[in-house]
Image 1: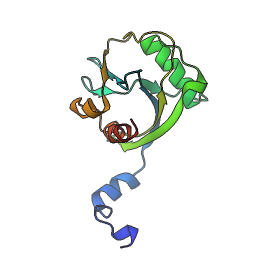
Image 2 (image 1 turned 120 degrees about the horizontal axis):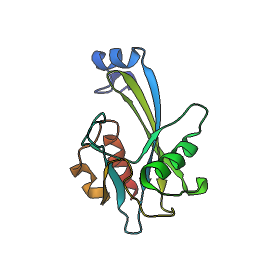
Image 3 (image 1 turned 135 degrees about the vertical axis):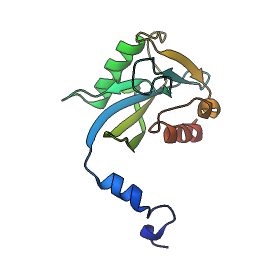
Length: 153
């Protein structure tokens, strides 16, 4: 079967949505993995878009900033953690179309950092085993990353 004939790949509604112009938003996230193999999730606080959903910590990449530098900055600002560039391993990425923008999100894995995560922006934190991550409601862009992490961890 040709790729264009594959089941699920020929939905005209999806094709039209993905072909429409959209602002691309580059954000970066981390799968912080502790010594017990658990992954840190952060719950979006009230007042933010998608409040109450769980996500991988991270944030927006500023103009002229690399994803790695943005992630190191965001983890310091949000959680009080210090990470070295060498401790970030590119893992996978999410590419997801929301109604008003298209999100592109590299996900890095990190097992080494200095400090204990402290929620500095009103978010709730949870260390979660990979097999339990699907129990935590997440934004649509994060959901496919869970299966990837389960397979790798």
